[in-house]
Length: 546
Image 1 (cartoon, rainbow, N blue to C red):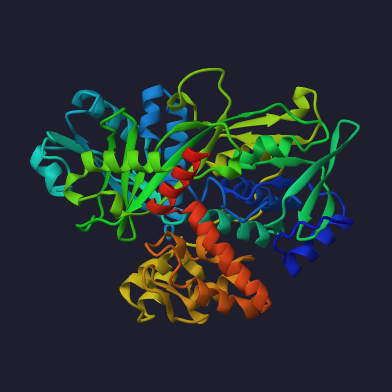
Image 2 (tube, one colour; image 1 turned 120 degrees about the vertical axis):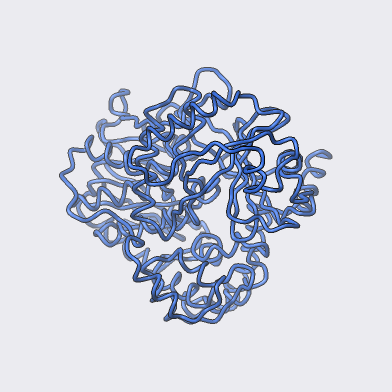
């Protein structure tokens, strides 16, 4: 059934038809709330097992923590310090799978771990930890660690401090676009028969006689009551908010920490090596990872008790990261003017009774609310990492008594056909490198038009067409932030957003008024989610005077 809601939210006619159809149909086996990496992974796995599944996302696929992560697919070297060997082993196993199945998105990344005057661990302890890390990564998906002399360390990373006394190298992996990883899982779920609906928040979990019965889903100006036997809340930082809208609200499950990052342009090319170290001022872990000619530096780890939607970096946090980058990477000439933008994300971790932020476990916890004396058939997911969506999905499948997978594992980068298509395209090297993230989908992308629309990222017109026709994009922000990755370039998409909006207008049936609104909305979203230092300074001054 449909109820008027008058929300003013973006709407898509195809999504509306699909929601209307499942609202009138038999109960779903599982309604999944949250289109981040966990929700998309759960939807893909359950749909591949033959279950009737729908995935509902309040904003866009990958919008929350997934999009605003450090983009690392790592085993969690620092988790060994807390003795969490099981999590490290699980994460390393999943890293190996992602490197094979999603090679267009996930690549090996070599890290330099320098020994500095402020390094708090002795060399023998670092060596032992890296040896354990290698041992747990039994399949050798990447090379093992190496001990380095001072000369070798500075040869690999000449911008490190002169006081560097030696170091190590080890390998992990990075994801070029975590939001596209989530999207590919959602699209794979759709290919298995699931209904996927972005810009479709769940406003209520309906229960009857202590059993989940339905979810009320809003899309545009309408509400749909969709019957479901099971509801899985994988809404990341919004898990507690979603549970508060159940007929029998569940107690809070989350403690959250915020992680702020800066993306900088450097006076010297950064090359391919990443750096893993500790902050000089407080001993926190610091990453510096190359990102399409820029350098991603992070991250903070501070408790967050505000609304998830209000998360935004601050001038103070960005300044802290600039100062730590100056200490760690003096040869790169980083200062406040180097910062192209900052961003912040939330880590939705299981609630702890006490302890520091860094002690919060990244393990996932699945809560069966029926065992808490609440409605049967309602589950919530807390915690987890970017790399552990498959174990979470498998555990839920077991709890639901689902059968074996009927479809092969997801992955559009497992062979090299797409790579040959790129080589034959004749496009500039930067554009070919950018388009690798599409894997086997690169051919339909190229067919949509090879004109470069953003010189900073290498994006082409065909990506915009493909996003609108095939990838469930509804807004300009969907396309530039979470399909093409243009927003991550130094221009933040502000050099091509008007051209992209003009291209999208006929594809998505936008009026001139809607096109202008999308342009304005994108500019606001960029300033909020990817602010430059000037914007952060203004926000800080306004906050101080309030």
